[in-house]
Length: 437
Length: 178
Ligand SMILES: [Zn+2]
Image (cartoon, rainbow over the protein chains, first blue to last red):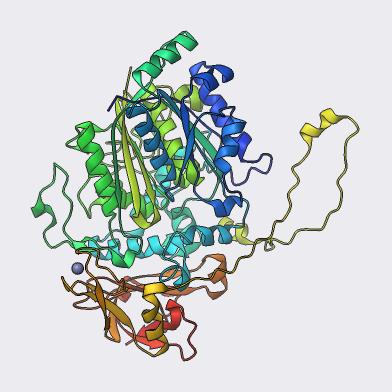
């Protein structure tokens, strides 16, 4: 396998609805931004790009099959090869890794991964119905298919098992919304407090509107390259790109039906011991075994043995405040059961921002400095790629340039992780990115 | 009135559009770039011919007042939601009747839902557990107050009840406090 670099990216501003454009120009906004940031001219890009990956989740939302080809021609990348990736909520993350595979294998020197979703074409509750079709349509969907309900059941079990509180969950929402206040790409930019989260409308007990990400229209693009690809780009643009190296990729899958998840033993990370978890039945419905598997394999490849000490930031899939807490544990930032205390201590907050609370250990490892899905929005096929773009900008130290403010720049960021998650943890991928220049 | 409550006051939005046969058009084509988008309604309705296939006996069971799971022949792993083949050894499972009485493993109260179920809100979802059964079962719980959810519901003993007129859906069985 060859080393693979993330050289540039772009994100359209996520919005509740983009009736002003169809999906193709929306992707082009992100693509043009990525090219401009690289200093690469449109026609030169069309010549250099060897192939693409199209990342979009739902044919139902679009009522347009083969939409990938329609983006490919709009970006002027015909007749180059392409393929579509679909992996539920993790579509963007899986597509990113598919681009990595294409470059690592030697098939492509330069690969564009573009993703989008247009979720505004149906009303919110029909949208929830489409998303719920990503659960077993014989046994699960007909009982009252609703993803917020599924995640609520998972966190109720987490509360029961470990004593996690709704206030701890609300702190995740406080953190992510307050971070996004400084991110011009975010759909929801507001300073809120724990009380606001608890006072917002109940959706599925104990999750309120502010515990849950919103649906969006949006697009994101990443450009991946091999070392030969970097040389070609340098030759074409007259300067060396400032890339991030993809140091590790990992993935995992769990049973689609939550009811089928086993009650066995924890999959251990290198810094954990079996004694840490005596008596814990794992993963049950309180934890995401696929998230642990994805983390373990990505860490292994990147040579990470203690993620809390060896990562500088994480952009993770916080579709729910609860799933962010559960993901701290899957990723080994704390032990299983300690996710609530982890956020309460302030560890995943930005060290420099004022949140209106005093934390004993604020800023140990910023998680979702961008504001995550909860505040940025979750246009499914774009989401995982958005994380990759924000991570690249962190590693370049270019957040100030792209966000218009340095507030969300993680100081001296050298290594970060991105984490993409689907369907109550059926599909999870983690990629490790390192400063590559 | 609190700000949060004020924000909730609004006329309900519906998907009914207005039939429109033409729109104004500028004399200068340059003005077209400032035009508001035309948004139309595209209805889409499908009836699927969905076979329960190998899982069909489960639904026949519900119609006859029996809740069925499966047990793996070779390794005896017992599934609270049936599957014909075992996830662990690949062996073929046999049908077994599950106890009518189980316990709440976890739950939620849905105040909102997918469009299809919106009219049924609030409803309570539970995962049911049984001693000696390795996996769980998703169902509705009736007979509790959805306005008063509490962690105390976890562990509650619940009993299966069956619809008299079967719809051949997993909701033909639901649970009530035992
Ligand atoms: Zn077996």
